[in-house]
Length: 265
Image (tube, one colour):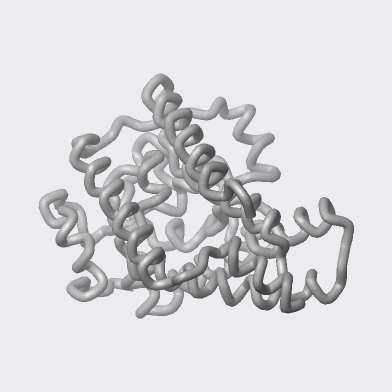
């Protein structure tokens, strides 16, 4: 699809800047650790993950969707629908795949080792939305390509999904104080910062809830929805119970975490 990179990078940069500004002007929580150090580590991890995917996969998800479309792979390529309806259904289907993947990364011990780095962040803000171990990013790309083979979304639907997923991940990981009345309305449809923050609690039962990144439907449907943290958003502890020392969360140690971590779950 033409201009894919421009669309994705432009939307990413714009939404990142917007959420960074909003959480600075109206923060929901006081940050516990130095912002500069965290941001540098989180952004470096993001670049490393992106570079690894580009090196490991010679094709982007959008280009792969075009190949699937040309060869008739997947449900929507076998059952043609009006373009707008296909795009909406494909985005919803891909969002369900991401929800299922997220649950699996919590429940399967080897996958959890990769996902731990995302949860080890001692604060949660817009940069946490892209803080994933490069190996997790690599595996996520493989899962996405597999989903494209099965679902058969159009290239346009994949672009829309990628833009929406990046936007909602930055939104719901942000430290922005969305007005409570508005939060109550928005979370009927989308995952809000207050809803997703519960998922980053050190409390295991809270961490194992609110898995959605975009649509809040899946957590309600599969009974993994938890409205609020027990200690409240201002007082709740973010991160992992056995990784509370910022000195153990430097960039090299973050990358080594899947291989050095002692699992308490």
